[in-house]
Length: 633
Image 1 (cartoon, rainbow, N blue to C red):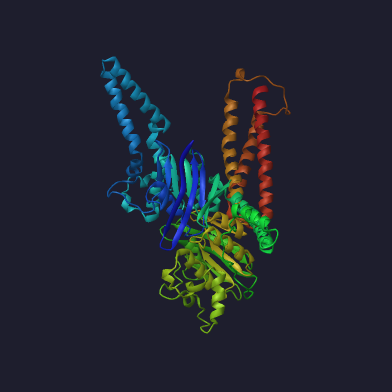
Image 2 (tube, rainbow, N blue to C red; image 1 turned 90 degrees about the horizontal axis):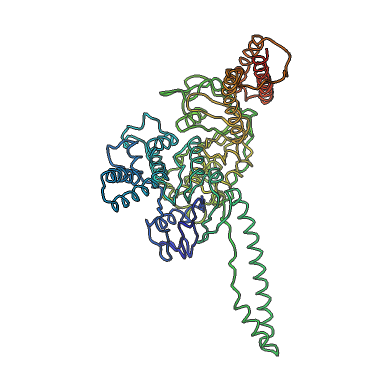
């Protein structure tokens, strides 16, 4: 069902048009990603769709009765209200309908006139159907589910909203939008303040919802998992692509090449006809020339297609360091709780280490300890020979806001560096023209990020230490950064919540769980997800198998069909002894599989996993033998 459409939509400001003559439709159940370079007008377009801004031209049409809502970016909550009650306020319409249904039921019970009874019964049925459709008889459970999914604990439910941080208040605004469940949901960077675990929950939640969604996000992994279509806002227009982000990224290049071929073919044809007309216009074939001129005048001229331009980032050549860049021994750090404890790993030259974990798990603190800016509670950090570390701070404090970009990036050790060389360096990171003379404080977040990355090149360091480097970058700048890091000759240590980035860049992953435990993964994010899934499946199977077998064993003999013996005769007590030994061995192997130290050695991982599968198979066989013995002995 068509819920929202727009046509001929145009909007611009003093700098010129953001988009012109835009038109598209949103249908029930569609989850559409809206992507485009920074400054293309994505947020402006969402504001037009929800009626918070007016277009210069065109119109937005909403299906009769359909509701549209935009995820707010600025919190505005009444003082003194608790988290739970503020979340519940998103359901005021349903709560009012529920109260109306109760009043209608009471009036129906007292009505004596047949016509009045019919009217009230009809109203009661409509309200009951509405509330059933929105699962409104279970509202408190829905609120708890959403709040828990977005990282709030039960202890938070009765705290006043104003006592929460800005990021937590942003999550509350997201919770209210999810609970209100408008027919068209406009989500502007919905996972901005979410860690990876919470983002996973949000992805699973959204794909199960029936509402139509238009989602602005820089999180490519999120877009891959959630959206079924992508709108690209670029060059003042919207282009639609089917599928998720990966399909869009491939199709955009294919479409560009096809459009460019069509444009050049048409251009060549027109130029050939115009050359012919010029040659014969005043001769005997002038009538033919005039006829051809009419033909080409009728042709609808194709515009030359464009791709979003990405900066050509490159970190250049650096001095070779020792074979081991950083070695960590028994490293521990706590504040009000343990962040990491007894951490051990070594980082060889040329490797790219990713660090991930929940918000507040100690990722940035670990970077500061590795850099020597903060002392550990115990343990040691050893740096290798000729190791030179350069730090990219996610808050971009390394750049003085009052300095021009060129001066802020200029290497302190080389104040006489050639200006053209510095311009060339900045242009590699997409900073060109007058931008190099702008004050850093006047730059956008993405421009500051690229300037900070350029500063690392100017310093000539051979170890890049990056804290959330993709936070302010658009999709094309992220892609350029990933290519630059994989081509970098030095070593990389990076904290990131960007799973797509971690997949493309890192080959070693350190996972903090927020409770002081760490896990070293020899691979990227997908390797971690695969191992996590295997561990979860193994734990679930171990918990379920004995219960299921015991349940079958407790059934009265007369309820089970008599069967032929498949195993040699053994006493049940003997089999139970073997089962106990196998279960003990399985628990030991499970503990080893959960230990971070195991994953430092790939061969041990394979050997332990193989042992685990063998014992699991043997235990299943013993359960079957025991069940047969109980029935047939």
